[in-house]
Length: 144
Image (cartoon, rainbow, N blue to C red):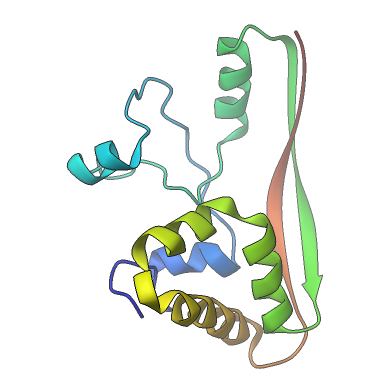
């Protein structure tokens, strides 16, 4: 596994197959490009690409965008997969942040990185069998 990618057993890899930690999102950052990210390490506790906002942070983003009558609700969704391989195929299809990290950091080891995600899913499920993960979702509505 590439040393700069999340590795099984590390806290950041837990977000690939478990609950992402909710954290407020920084609203005042002007550095969004890859070059800036390489130059300036984020302060400890800064949300990463696999973090989700808190309900208050999401509401704040909508308010800062000029929206009113903002409502944010939190719920849970359970995803079910018939195998760890299908979990990885789903993540690969829908998760742009994970694809971007693997594209950027894994180089020639991209398939090894995807295989590590599959292995982490199998480990979390207790083996090579059907698995399910419950995750928090935020539902927001507002008036422009």
